[in-house]
Length: 488
RNA sequence: GGCGCGUUCGUCUAGCGGCCUAGGACACCACCCUCUCAAGGUGGAGACACGGGUUCGAGUCCCGUACGCGCUACCA
Image (tube, rainbow, N blue to C red; front, side, top):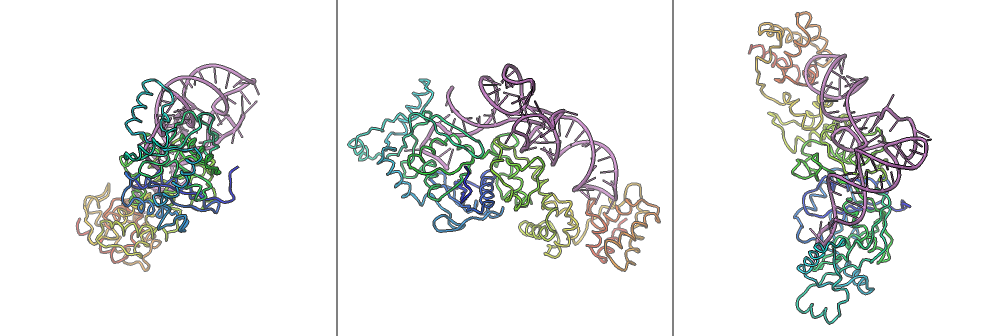
């Protein structure tokens, strides 16, 4: 009975740190689902814990989502890119809902001190009781007693009264049918003594208020489902559909964190990962279409993503596979797009070049490296020679295996002459003059080209030499060959 | 401790009782291609946590055990 008439989903981060890759994947799943069903995707800031607020965390999260390619619904009431729906600005809403609950006897004020709470917990543990939790000390508090405590300066919390028996059940999109005994759950705090709601209250109220049709969230919430089920029931509200998502783990099977290297989205941008590739990889981590599809453009993800095929078990983040997939995305993108991405990448973090590349130069160099890139970061070392004023030559490296300096100079001179005489200095003609030349000179093709590679690029590893010479141009190529010959 | 969830190659996964002598991908190894490095191609090694059931037949269903994770907060 999944509703598909009007899909509206939300991503609800709490602004407590930098954007974690796991949170971002939750956002991606929700976004893909919304896009697939032509629904709404919204952002809600869950900042009800005053102690854990972090400056700039909201903007950092939004920046990450934008970079990876998500967009979201705007609107004064439901949140937009500049001012998302913020829980701390909705306190009246939660209070009015809770007043209703108190009036109907489904919630009550509790004045118990943390000390007393700890004390009863300790006693219960020592007594070996299965279900530890609040003892409802304040449930039947008289109004006289309450006002006495109130005037003594005690600030109450509001507890939601859980049923003593029965079960709470849910048909989860990912986990299927789950049920829990209500007696396992105590009367949880809905409003804290500072007047802020807890997650349980706020998320239920907001999901209803925002008209959310599908809740996608981390599976750590699965155990809290009874609280939410009973809240919806007490309020007389229809429940949205739920999809609890598995967790992303580090290779050591613990929760992925900074300690493991890149845990935030922007770290991947800085390493030269394409946003489409990251989205593709993150989606594949915990979801599959079939037994073979791995490469998906963002549009393909949108038209194929189905939360029913999300895995129930946690997944280990495999950096190597992300990098491989990134290479696939680079190779499957139009050269123009790659050039653009590379130009941006180099602009943000200029490589160690003598000459800073302009857009045209970058575009020229992309065909040289396209099938050699796993990340954008791999490009600079390969084409450094194009952007160098001087090339430091190690004569030892110019002389190829099985050759001597004399012979090396001889072939450099021959190549120089051959290239100088060429009418058209392009890859094809360059190849057709150089390749036969090896035999004429009595050396192997590899020896001739290897000599030229080191002489003109200063690198033992470079893009294919004919193409490289074309990009260098005739004058520059001849100059470098001449210099190399002199140094022998 | 209680409750819940999970467990297929090192990793991501396909598998919803016979199509599985368990398929694909990354990583790894070998070979091919080749001007270096890649890319690409071919092949190889590599897994159903364990024990009971149910069934003609179980990776697939049931129960138990082990291990892992989550919840058990005036954190989300």
